[in-house]
Length: 212
Image 1 (cartoon, rainbow, N blue to C red):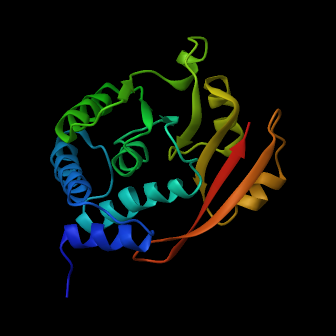
Image 2: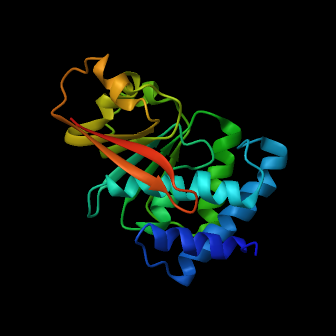
């Protein structure tokens, strides 16, 4: 039997060890609906099916929660695109102060729209490239990304906005250890790799957490 989108969302969240409220499930349903609607004109994602968007965007984004510290912290999503992983993280962790960095005007229009639709607070869209805000005094505890950065480039570009003792968190494929073995990253303290399973499909994911 094919599951409805709200059932997929709930089951996926439960598999992640979360206890979602009705409001959180409704927020993901609105996000799904608006993303599909805007995608027809703005091409925000190559995914079209509900199941793919839920699993490969929403649930995949929530794997980052395994590495994000507890508490009222500041997080920036670099190259946010359609809002992943930032918005799913914000829905589940509303206490986080979230900054979505995205240079594309079409994508930031969608981000501002969905933030308003969901009534999210303490979340800001920054319509710039990460390199453009390095000298602004902007500072966060954690930088996350699902954009196609290699590890070294992401750390280099995001480093000026991450405080000392903060973290860089990104998702990589099964060759992550090979990639790390070939590079040297300056001025970092520690690297942790979380080997996780994507809910509902059990695909392996590797979340890399780098301490500055």
